[in-house]
Image (tube, rainbow, N blue to C red; front, side):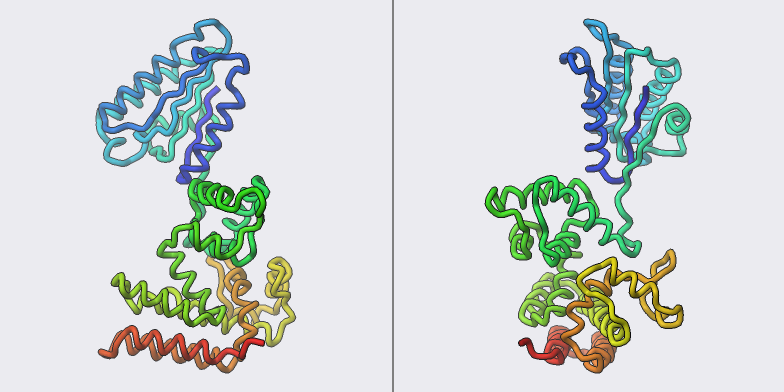
Length: 366
């Protein structure tokens, strides 16, 4: 039986292949009953040697009889990169294909795991007709709503370790860890060790202490600080980015403007709709049940329908800002954008003034 595990999500591919290997390997087998071949090729010649080793393993019956599993693990030479396109690497894959075409004995199972496989080649086309192919691809972060899917994945993995995320901690973790399941697994395991046996709830400060702050994470953290009316934190992060030669216009357009826009839209919606801000499904249902004309101006998914998730993240904090103040903040964002592009005013001063204006427009905390 042939099983192929592939896709852009390296972590998920490796995990699924290992799980399948452990499931089908002989229970009473020893080191002679299985062959695990490392497919990480240094160059084209090494790729050819790996293919040859795989062929030899497939053609060698178990020493003591019984079943045998051959796993070509993490093959890196089957895609369209420089190594995979080299003639020597292609020759090795073609030889492996000819071996598979001749058929394997009933005693041998073959498992292939690879994150890159060229679907235009004869090798993949033959596998498609003769093997079971399981794909694990990363979520497309350019598509709306990816954060919700990642949050569900994180929550599920955390529960396996008896961990629970505070809602704000979960939001930040999703933005820092991204869509890579391997990275998510590593970061959750780090948090598990950090918290120890006595504490099982992950708080916001735990995320800040343990999870590296990526570029996307900084963008999210600036926006989150604005939502929470934490001007000191927002200005600190902005200054850090400017000191690293990040563009002021990039900070404005990637973080500040989307934050203000989502706060404004969420506040405007809640002026007319009783949408529960502590339950995503109820909030989503309330927005989707609006008449078409009333939700046409809200952010839309590319596939159609309201992009609810960013509004839900903003809704709880939007209550602290008067609608008129958020409308004025939208106008101020436009003025700041124009000033950054057309004037010689100090960029740091422009962003600082905008942040102070937004924070000071919020209602005073009780």
